Amino acid sequence: MKTAVRNTAGTGNTGSSKWSFASKAGSGFWLIVLGAALWGVDPLFRIILLQSMTSSQIVLLEHVVIALFVGPILWKNRGELKGLGLRHVGALLFISWGGSALATLMFTMALQYAGGAYNTVLLLQKLQPLFAIVLAHFMLKESLPRNFGPLLVVALGGTYLLTFGFTFPVGHAGEFMQLGSLLALGAAALWGGSTVMGRFMVGKLKYETVTSLRFILALPLLLAVTAGEGSAWNLPAGGVALTLVGVNLLLQALLPGLLSLLAYYRGLKTTKASVATLAELSFPMVGVLVNWLYGGELLTAAQIIGFVLIWSVLFAISRQQTREIGPRQLAHQVA
Image 1 (spheres, one colour):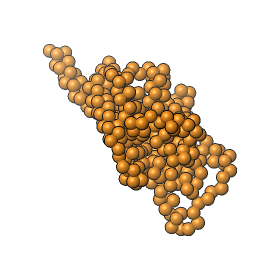
Image 2 (cartoon, rainbow, N blue to C red):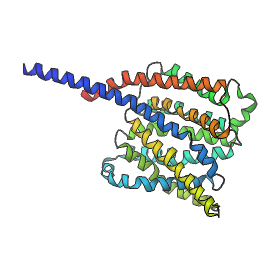
Image 3 (cartoon, rainbow, N blue to C red):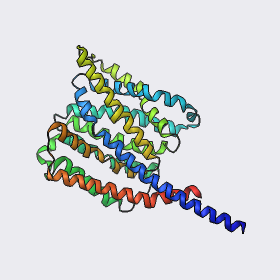
Image 4 (cartoon, rainbow, N blue to C red):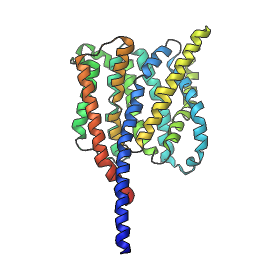
């Protein structure tokens, strides 16, 4: 009788935990959507800052501002660093040097050299899922969700519609070989790999610790790059202009910088890296809305269709993750 009662109680607890984890899996997915959506407003701040500073100066100051906020968090959680192995250190260096320093620097330079072809830069960024899926397969041994291939095609198709509409950019083929586009492609590869490395690390460290290390470890590299560049700091001389630049830098660092990554890494705790890359497609949708609201560029029929296609994929993936990934991971934990 005691065994029967104990088993019944265990079943009840498992059912409750199953529901709880499934709920967390779905919410984690949408936290990544939120974090990536905040990235969509990043070019708005970054393009303005490019009028006063070089790409490396912007990225360095951004990391310095964020480091001031996350430094106390890292100090509080410093005990977590004791158990790190070489693989963890390598992953953290990839996240900080590659995904934070170099990728952000390359993306900023891509905007600078794009010559107004920001759509091309955004389209190339959406190659991130391809890089992340390949790396997640080899490093994390992740299997793909059911119907992931068709959903990925739909999502990328929606992204294409958001950027180029119903036209094929034959007349703009040269844009893909320009420096700005090559830099954007490099940023996409580094950010895609950083997604996988971040998923690997949130299984070892708290997501707040991973976020802190991402920015703090990048500082030495950014200092070296900025010093090696040797460019003068051409900040505005007037007090009002300098204040506006400072406020813009602060907002850029905290909103699409710190806040977005806190939500992003929190979501990665219960979201597979290959699935997270689809959630990140909220980035171009917000970018289109920003262009519409602040640049006066109206949404076309193709962009509306692309918007609907991507959000349909996000909803389908979220539902599937809640039903399938949560119970499987829960069963693994119970076992």
